[in-house]
Image (cartoon, rainbow, N blue to C red; front, side, top):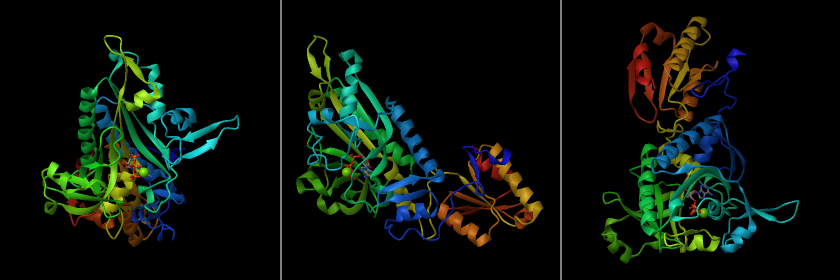
Length: 427
Ligand code: ATP
Ligand code: MG
């Protein structure tokens, strides 16, 4: 059936099953979820639990692709681990206990025995690596995955920024020694910052010292300035210094070469977190390798997370205006929102269809509002959905041969001929 095919690069709104909503559900407090629900990006199933609808999935896939490219650059290999986890394994490291890890979801097998639902994957991946790491020659190994994590979060009031099920990119490094570990650890910081820059929040994202290092005294977090964030951070934008409130002290300031009065206290969202486990995890799990002289040594481990779905929420929170979502171009579900007016006029409708087809042929990611609706409704929806460029086609634009291109989130308006339109947006 022609008309019913779908393609990654383009979409007619008359085919898109999701509808925009005037109001978000009354129990939804967070701006990110309110806007995403109203735009038809996500559906709220229950508190802290959301389904990703076609538009939302596209944003998530774009974020993932940016992260995937940067993880690959630093030599990390993609895989997917299972979400069902063995109790014995987590008992070995003392992390099965709900008092130690307070976000476990656990279940029972009908065949007998308990399983854990993945809140993280350090233990299973370290254990799995026993099959692949035997000698120093097998090291280092770097793996990552995009995975749904399940956490029984007590508070879930931040929309998709704190889900009970959420998408994380988690990476794990397995090294021979501290030197190799540090090289990857520092490389991952650079890779992470590239990701955040590509998503448009590079300037507002800081590597911070934070509590929670298992091996070292500190872990590093990546915190993005965001009013809706749950963390408090002291930052100096010029010096790119940031300290999490949890570990903030006058001594810490001195160590980082800033005085307390140079720091600004801001709300931030933790978008990433990296840990150094030293040899402790390898030892506990029993992941050893043979050194050159045959001595069995525990592998040096690190773990590295990015909150993929939280990131989507942070981008909505940071860039939205009073009319709706404003996507950075790098993660927008479609680059161009083609809005057809006067669609009751068959000639104009054909003409607009033609522009849509040409944009497709030129490889432009385009969402086409081909609905039979009032202009006011179309513009309001277009503002809510937040594509970077809105191109309006009407009887008037056809006659004048000039198209008004509105850059979402700015006051900028460009005027283009039909040909300019194609060349400007072609991939
Ligand atoms: P938080 O302090 O926000 O609870 P965390 O320290 O528990 O985060 P990690 O276990 O290091 O987080 O997870 C890696 C990343 O996953 C975090 O940096 C964050 O971006 C994201 N993340 C953690 N918990 C959630 C959640 N409940 N919903 C969405 N994203 C999350
Ligand atoms: Mg947490």
